[in-house]
Each structure stands twice: as C-alpha cells, then as structure tokens.
Image (cartoon, rainbow, N blue to C red):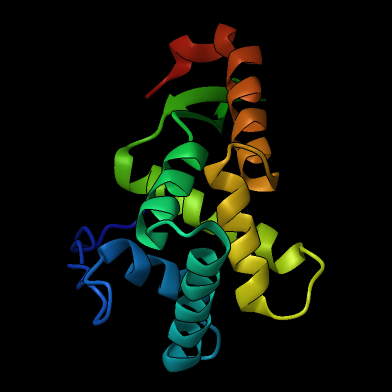
Length: 156
C-alpha cells in the first residue's frame, strides 16, 4: 500500500460534439499512443453508423449498452491464512461504468470486421440488445460472485 497521498479524482470534461462525458470516457478507453483525434474519429464514425443502422439516437443506444454491461458485483482475490479466496464485492457506479466501457472496447477489438468504427458500433448495438460478448462477460462475473458467495464474510 502506498504511503503517499490519495490520488485526486480528475474531472471528466464532456466531448465537443455530443456534450457527453460517457463519450469522453470511451475515447480514453480506445486511445492508443496519445492519438486522441483518431480515437474520437473512430467513435464519431461508429455513432454515425449506429444512427444509420437503427435510426435512433446513438447516445441513448450507447447509454443503454453501458447500462446492460455494467456489473453489480465482482470477485477480488483476498489472501487469508495462506490460501487465496475469491471474495465477492459490490462495484461502485464509476468503476462499473469503466468496466463496461473496457469490456465493450476489448470485445470490439476482438471482433471480425473491416474497421474499428464498424466493429465498435456492432458491439454497442449488440450490448444494447442484451446479447454480445460484453454482456456475456458481465453474466460470467455475476456467476463467479454467486458461486463464491460463501466467502462474502471476508469482505473488507
């Protein structure tokens, strides 16, 4: 454990076009090698693709996708008496949103397709319809927590 001061919470500014903090958080998840403009271009193209495919507001679909993939509980490894237990812990809202965005981008990268913007758009649409790899990951996390419910009394 660090003896230094606790890291200060950074404020997240909304993006320029959609005025949404969620899109800015997604930009940070896609960002590679400091190329923020490229990450934003990928996201805006994917949001246009979502609009063309569904004829609905892409921001609402993104919010629904994040809501569907946000986990409520997760397991954390805790060492007690020489053995390691998977202890189920509740997930705070900010961490849950970050996990959801992380899973959406990870499974979008792993998808087969032409461009990253199309793959990201398809993953977001699938997550908003409650099927897709990111939603499956959330269900798997919940199952792990349910299976290790016996160790819940080890929570810190």
